[in-house]
Image 1 (cartoon, rainbow, N blue to C red):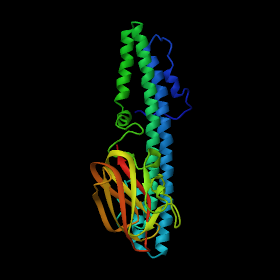
Image 2: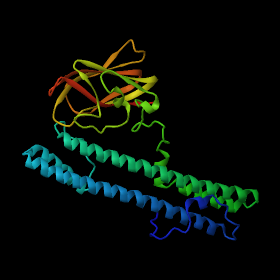
Image 3: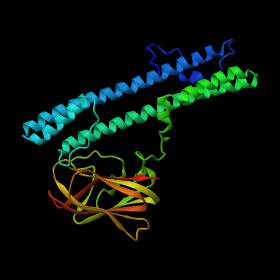
Image 4: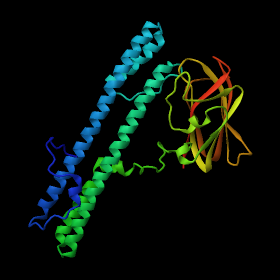
Length: 318
């Protein structure tokens, strides 16, 4: 899309939906529609681009502080890993998967950065979709009006503009973005949420496993029980799941031993993961479109004490 210099918008997107009076030259009408549309698209791209830049600067600031902190603690490996991340971000490269032995603080900082980026992209897609839909609706309304009036050649000019908009790279990308709440390969719905009807049991504070929150400290923000123990999430109905995520307490370098089982009926269980020495943080379990309703986590060990701590359980599918 050709970049439009910044200037004050003369009309908002809603103006697209108003029928423009008949003009001698329909091309002039299309140009007015297009100018307003492009201004709005550019404004929205600029808005979210600024948000992404601000998030990037904040991430770099936090990483630099963490690098110094790790250096003072004589954690040379951790400081080197953070430095490599800083250099990649400054060079405009995509972040790579963190090493398994990355410091737990580095993991938390990266997770916050990635979640922030995902939120910005989601908000941008939603706004751009609305703008494009309003513009195409306005064009369609004008095309129908011209057709009813017998001005077929003029209506075809409007139709050409519809095709042009549909071929824009930004619009094609939006066409492949799912509507909110609809499943996609890379961003399925989290069905293990109390807000979606899921229920949790086992140990103490079990409901915290399905509240959609991962903030925790040494004393709260997680479900817990004495090892060996068991936690369970009931999704409320059978779903097709392709990914489970388990978030374990991660405010130090302790390691947990656990097993994860899934079941469609609550009677027959299949083990999908066993890890005797897992670091805290997110545990990713990929499944091949497995039908299930129940998820059970068996807590086996903790290198720091006798308890097992589950911050959150997520199940993605449809």
